[in-house]
Image 1 (cartoon, one colour):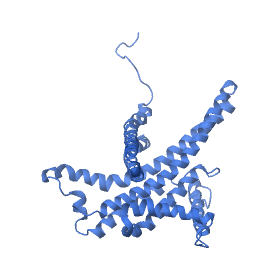
Image 2 (cartoon, one colour):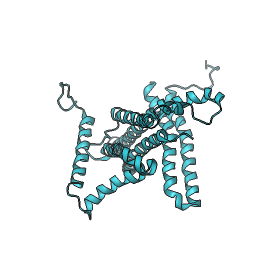
Image 3 (tube, rainbow over the protein chains, first blue to last red):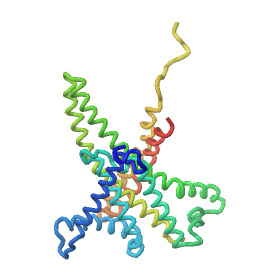
Image 4 (cartoon, chains in turn cyan, purple):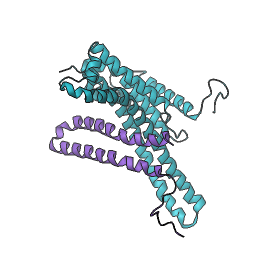
Length: 240
Length: 77
């Protein structure tokens, strides 16, 4: 506990990092969209590129123009929130991702879960749960096997895998960086002698994996928003 | 006198190799998904964007098993 210790608002390091990331999101989007020009400047076009990526490649590609518009705000929020919270993992001084404790991933997975069930119930008020559990076109005796599998995979495993995928990617990335940099410190200062030559290798690997973590951070934000889009798409699909 | 009924003895916790075992399946799966996508793009380059989206969805589903493998190590200790 670092801030306000002893009060109900006690905050540890990760919460402070989340607040810093939140302020960064607000600041960047405020600066990027403050003075909108028809011919965008360098910073505005960067922000527009990010927003366009979510709109074109995730929302409209999966859901089409009309439904894409409806679910665009939640997909954009998810993408940029996860992206910024993940990127704190590789920023010096902060050094840990805001999503590497289970709270944030579980809340985001719950939002995604509620969102796709809402989308499905809204589109097919009577038939959503029936179509989800008893997919049409399957012989009736197979429903004995199919219905439990669909129940587990759609309504139980989807939120669990969304949570675990994000959380474990960030935890494992942090552990890998810790291992490489503490190995460097060990070889250089504790082991001594010829061992210190190995520290060059472990430092180089630590650096390479830091770059790899940037890729993972972007990819996980993309995958989370993409999967939410896919679940909404499946819930909206008309039965054949 | 040596204990002749024991051929090999394992001390410590076998859970340490658990994640290694759990990663085999998803590793093969992700390899197949990416390989097939490359094959598809090589045959029909104009579908590259669509195939890439499908590839990421496929990878996300496959690698979830590996991450359940990591989580199990934290839960059942």
